[in-house]
Image (tube, rainbow, N blue to C red; front, side, top):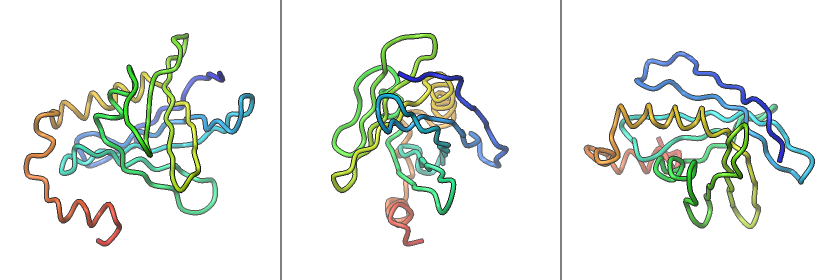
Length: 150
């Protein structure tokens, strides 16, 4: 599959872990990968979920909320089910993982560079451990934010 050096950027942020901006490849077919900018954003108040925005060239981005554990496990093994799945590609010079998103019968496949995402996710676990993800979570606020009612 198509491999190239990923674009990695960590814009400044007031939070403990700055957002991660990655160039991933949306697989339109076997020979035509489409470079796509994706921003991963971590909020310690909702540590179990990662906000993932697929940035479009025109118009608003597309936002998905994905489990931090799903993304972490998907870097090394099969992870997720139903709408969001992730697993590693074949080993090579530039390790990556497949990220598959499904919505309303449509499926999109992305190739995500493993190393920068793994470093970023590891940094989030230094801020909030897996065991502490649900401590103090305001479920009402979280669900309003997910469903854009705030």
